[in-house]
Amino acid sequence: MPVSFLFAISSPHSGVVHAGPLTIHMYGVMLLVAIAACIALTGWRWVRWGGDWDLIFRMAVWGVGFGIVGARLYHDLTSWSEVPDAWWGPFAGWKGGLGVWGGIAGGVLTGAWIVKRSGNSVALMLDAVAPGLLLAQGIGRLGNWWNQELFGKPTSLPWGLKIDAAHRPAQYLAAKTFHPTFLYELLWDVAMVGVLLWVDARFRIRRPALFALYVALYTPFRCFEETLRIDPSKHWAGERLNFWVSLAVFIVSIAAFVWIQFASRPRRAAPTRARPLPKGPAMAVPKSKNR
Image (cartoon, rainbow, N blue to C red; front, side, top):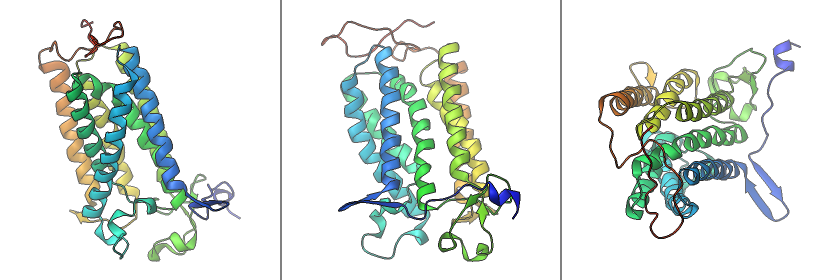
């Protein structure tokens, strides 16, 4: 038996766990864990900057809901061939199929609206939430592992991922191990969370440059990941649709980071660091002096 197969990563044979009368979809559980991690990290950062947990919870309730709607809508529009052929097909997020770009757009726009209405700084909140969003994206990929989906091309590497025959594309039925793209993204995202936290602690950041940097760090890896994946996708000029989306977003995010951090003038309404303020009605926006 080849050494690579001996050390291959196993996949769960089912994405569903039965606990008595309960049927637990592990994709949904991983999504909840990812959301909880994002809320915890964002709340910790926001409170350290002088904010309060109440705003984080309000933003999460609305942002998560509209984020899931946006993620599913993006998937339905860009991967219609993967939508189950039933009336409930477009809504079947529990079967997988949540587009990260739609989720980020829906969640961030909704969250920004909540923050704006509260009288707080949207720019500051964007930088508070950036590491948490990336952490959630990495953890959420574990749902793909449970569903045996969105894996990469066949590989004989020692860390190849075992995929059951029922989940392999027809042209790869003879292959047994594939690139574990879920693991690649998990490791990359967690590492880049560390980079974002280090940059924010070490350098003077003009808000919301950190959010732009978060997008700029994620998108090159996503371009690489798209060259590995073999699940159905629309193609243009020989590459998957999300490859081009990621490349375009990368270019825009780099330009935004350079403009915010180096070209734009500092704004008083978007401080680089918040300082703790006394609790009470007077604390509407965490404020700080530029460092």
